Length: 120
Ligand SMILES: [Mg+2]
Image (cartoon, rainbow, N blue to C red; front, side):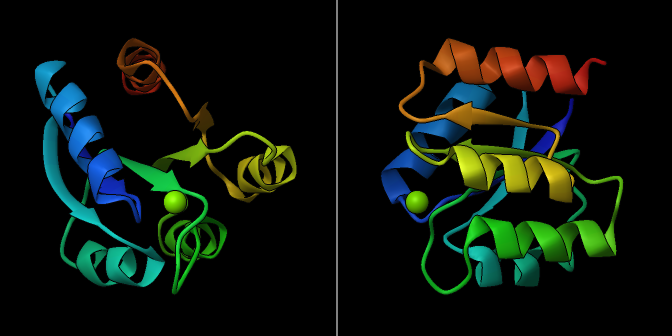
């Protein structure tokens, strides 16, 4: 069972995504509400995949991504973007994110993207 760590400043988004992932057979091993929180928790966790929201207070997804990839270049990260964030998504892919999921998304779409990454 692949493990996933969710990073999003929206508690509702975290809850919904965790529910979809669990239902799809993934183990959600934790979640964080911003980049700083995520980096602190990831000191002690080794998820197969991280879902990373772009817009968050304290430390946003791009800065968090840089630090995560710096530390572990093989870490699989999927960005969660909003409409109008093409530039930031491109930056994220350059830094090392594997793919992105654009909000608002259907649970099936998110799961499909994540399945593709973890089964390839
Ligand atoms: Mg956000």
